[in-house]
Length: 382
Image (cartoon, rainbow, N blue to C red; front, top):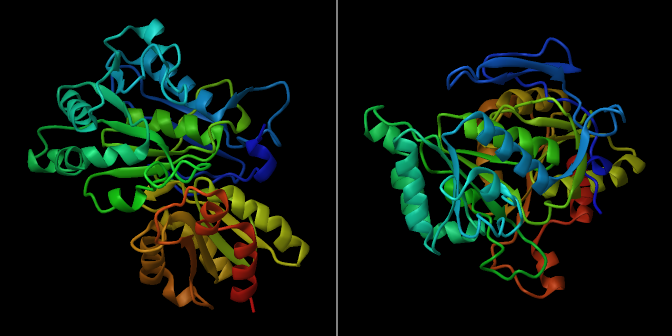
C-alpha cells in the first residue's frame, strides 16, 4: 500500500495564512475561524505532518479517503448545519467510501442521496447555502460536474456579488478526478482549467491524508464556495496524522522539499512524480526545491515568490491540460510578479491536449512522467 510520507520531505509551509505568519520554520498557528457560535479558537500545533517527523506514539494512521471522512464527521458533529448531498453518498457510502457510515450517524436528511442529476443537486446545494446551511456536494466523478457548470458558475460563484452581499454561499464541491487507471476519456477529466475562471470560486487540491483533512475542514468553515479536487489514484495513500484538531489555510502552499537550484511547482498526483524525479536529480548533483501549491485559486505568491528569489529558475509540473491550464495561469502570475528574479525561461510540463486514451501505454504517454521532469530540470539548469 502506498505511503504518503515515503515520497515527501517533512518541511512546513511558511506562507502567511489569514494574516498570521509563523515566527518559526518548525511551527505555525492554525486558525479555526469563529464563523459560527463558539467555534472560533486558535489551535497551535507543530507543523510537521509527515510520519517521518511525528512521534510514533502520537497520531493515527489513515488512508486519504479516511482522512476526508474523518474531517466530515468532525465538522458534522460540531455544526448541525453541515450536510452532504450526492449520488450514493448515503448508505452505500459514496463511490470511494468517503461518506461511509455517515448516514447511520447523522440520518438521511443530513446525508442525502440524490438522483443522477448533477445540475439539480448542485443547485440545491447553492440554495441550501443561501438559507444558512453548509452543504458538501459530492460529484461521483468530477467530470460529471460539467452537467452542473451553470449552477457552479452563474449561481455558486456569483450570487454573493449579484445579491449585493445579501447571500453567502458556504458550499463545498468535492469529488474524484484526474487520470486514473484506464478509466477512459470521460472519467479522466481535470476540471481545474474549467473552474479557474469563475469569479468568486476558490479551488484547492489535496495530495496527502494530512492536507486532505485540513483542507476539507477549512473548506467547510469557509464563507466562500470552495472546490476541493481529490485525485482518484491518491485515495489509498496512508499517513500518520495528528490526533488533535487542526485546520489548514485554503490559500497556503506547502514546502515539500527545500532546495537551491530550481523551484518545481506542482500539485495533486504530480507531487509524487516530482518527488520520484527529485531522487534522480539529487543523484545527478541537482538540488531542486519542491512546492505543492495546494491552492489553485488564488495562488500563494508569497511562498512561490520567496522560492523564486532564491533559485531563479522555475519548472511547473501539472496533470492539467497544457492549453488554458493551471500551469499557464501560474506562469503568467510569475512573469507578472517575479520577472526580474528569473535567470531562465519558465518551463511547464502538462498533459497533452488530447482525450485520455483507454489503453494504459497511451494513457501514460499523455501524462507527465518522472523522466521528463529530470530532463526539464537539466535543461533549465544548463
